[in-house]
Length: 223
Image (cartoon, rainbow, N blue to C red; front, side):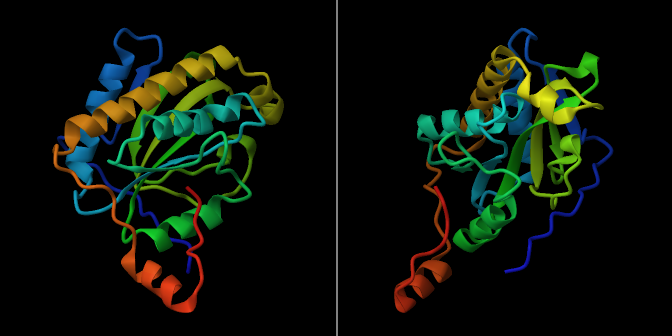
C-alpha cells in the first residue's frame, strides 16, 4: 500500500483553521475539549472510523507527550475512537510510516487526528494548538518524515532552534504531564460531547479481515 496522502485543507471565511490554549489557562481542558468538538462538527464525517495517532517516544522527556496522551486515552477505554501510540507501544520516526499504512489497512477511510510535541519560541511554551490538515512530524529535530493526519494537535514543550535533541531530553516532565492531562481529557470530552449516545464501536476493515482469514494470515497492525 502506498503512503496515504493528507492534503492541506483551506479554511472557510467564518471558521478558524486553528485554535490554541495555554496549559495553565483556567479551565484549559474544558476549553480545549469544546474547541475539539467544534473541529469534529466542522470536519469529521460520522461514518468514518476515528483514529487518534499519538507520536513520540518514552526515551525522551520532551518527546514523551504523545505516548503519555495515548496511554491516558487507552486507559479511558472509550469505543468512540482507536488509539495508536502509547508508552508501551510508541509510534516514532522509525515506525511511523509503517503504522500509518497499517491503520489504513485495518480501517476503511480512517479519519486521523495526529498528536505530537513540538519546540517553539520561549513565549509559546505551554501552548496547545489544534489545527486543520496534516502534521509534519520531525521538523523540530530536522527530520524529514511524511505528513500525517486529517487534523492535528501539538503542544509546545520547550524552546527550539538549537541542540534540539538535548533540549527535548532536558524538558521538564512536570510540564509534559500537565499538557498530557489537558490534551487527553480535552480529546475525550470533545468526543463525548460530539458523538451521539448510540455511537457504535469502530468497525474494522472487513475486506482486510476476510482476506487474512482466507489466507491464514493475521492482519498486520498494533493496538
